[in-house]
Length: 222
Image 1: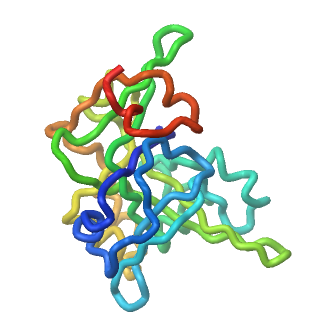
Image 2: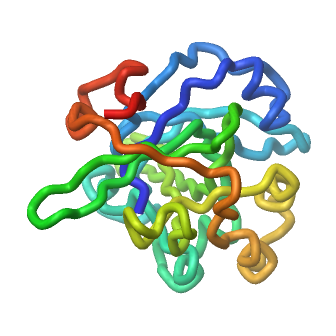
C-alpha cells in the first residue's frame, strides 16, 4: 500500500515535469503527507491543458455515505480496480497524477515496524497514478477526493513490503490523463511495478509515525 508520501519539489520544476499550464501556487514542502489531508493532483482540463487541484486523500465515491467512509479507500489495487464499484468509474473517466518526491513504507519485524523512505536515486519529482471522484451531499456539500493505485512491489521495495504505489513514466502521462480513453484495458499496461533501477531507500526515524510530524529531517537516514 501507500500510506504516506513526500512532496517538496519547487513549483516551477513541477510545472515543467507535469506540463502544467501554470506554475502551482501556495504549495509548501511537505514531508509527511497522510490520508484525509488535502493533496495536490493533476487533472486534464476541457481545453486540453492540465490543471493542479487539491483533493482529499481517501476516495469518497458518489452515492456513498460521505467523507467518513474515505479513509479506507486511500489505495486501489491496480489489478482489480476495474472490478470494484468504487473505482471502476474513476478508472474509466477520472484519472489523475499525484506528484511526489518519495514515499514511506514500513517493514514489519515482529511487533514492531520500521519506516523506510523510498525515492528516486536522482533528483526530481515523479507522478503516482491516481483516481478521483466528486461526492455531493443532500445539503449541497461537495468533496473532491482521490486514491493512489498500487502494484506489486519491485525488487527494491519487496524486502520492505509486498505493495508499492504505481509510478507512471513521463511518456505515459498524456495517455493516463486522456479523457477520451475510457477502456481500462488501454491504461492497464501502465500500471506495473516501477523499474527498480534508479530507485533507492533507507531507514528513517520513528517521528514519521506521527502524521503531525514534519520537516526535512523526516527523510534523513535514522
